[in-house]
Length: 79
Image (cartoon, rainbow, N blue to C red; front, side, top):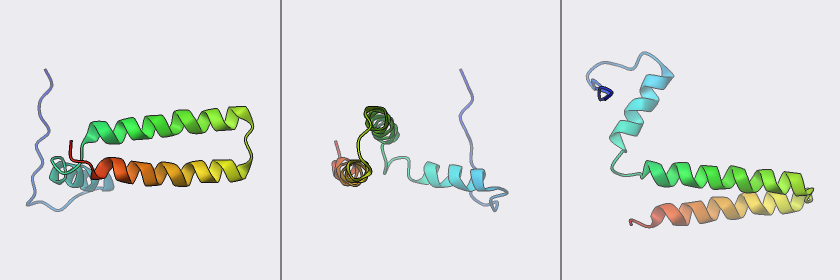
């Protein structure tokens, strides 16, 4: 078993990665990491398919905008 990550909040962050780790630790209960990872994976798989199929740039832009909107709605659900 790996040791849990202990973050000391009294010390100032020494790097950007440490600052990012603190933000994630503070918001861990607020954001579901699994939902975030799943939405990113689905986005890249579908975008790769669009590139392979040779779709026009307008379709790729529409896909990106609809993905952003659907991901936002997906995160608003608290289940």
